Length: 432
Image 1 (cartoon, helix red, strand yellow):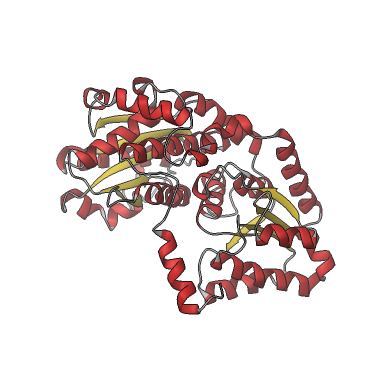
Image 2 (cartoon, rainbow, N blue to C red; image 1 turned 60 degrees about the vertical axis):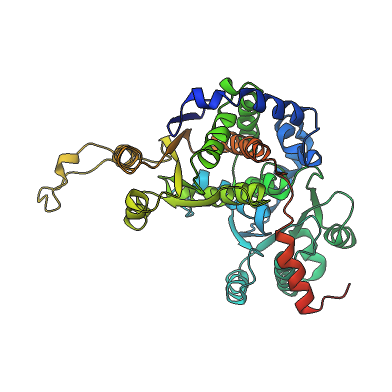
């Protein structure tokens, strides 16, 4: 498998980075010995080596059963890490439309908001289709997915009967406890387990993501293989040899020593957009504590160059960019000849659209970093496939953990998120 490339030369240099070599090694050693803050949620770092082949086979078996039963739509119900990672992986590999690559099953998402209009429209969309439900929640009581599951479960049971509906409801939940676990046991739903030692935003390579990926037709074995190979590179303590740690230290230096308060992650492929959304949760929820951390922001270029480009180039210097490019696109096109040439594009004949996209990247990189004085970090992916997805997930999960520990915060808790939930329960007078 071709590896991810990292270029930090337009943001800092290795001399500055290597000042943190000992600190990084110490943090790494504590992670490896499970002595660091939040160590009970470090299960993701060894996940590619610990996935049970029997679980993979079970996911593939149930997905195949749904295919054989002509299920048209899988409704994935979850929020946060139970939603963003799944959507990110499907779009990353297949694009954000059903074409050009055929999907074995359409996937839609519910329970990721409290919009009544959105929920009603999704219920309407599947009411005349053959659909199954994959509800994802450790507890089963998180408000947004719990409401959506109640509504979709009722629609399914009203359509095909309660006894038949149980064969088309799959619960991904806790191994031993919680209301969803109990509901699944009482009704005979098929179950997958979310490991206790992996938090939601780190869970995409567990059944949370792998089962929907199997349903849509992705090769989950290749995804795990890509994650496993990448993990060999990112689970070493040497800062000089670990690109994930170099990325973490670079962004830490830009925050601590140069005063940047926001990181804009950018991609030049629109189907990577939801991967950037996953990244925003991963970094925002892991680092944003104790009045520390960078505000995560995202953009798709060249689209957003026509809306945000002016600010990035000449506005206040509050942000730096981390840019993701792809060496080999999913599909490429060549510019065709047009005898009238009214658009004056014939000089581009026989050049590919991806080649022009790469020129846009190079031109923007130089404009923003050299003239605009906006630091730029560049990450190049070999291509957008299962192996690359597994690899880049491990890269960022390792990087965010190191980055948070450099800030001296726990990467794996989210006490601030609980404040709005408590307020909601108080306002709605939820019984204790």
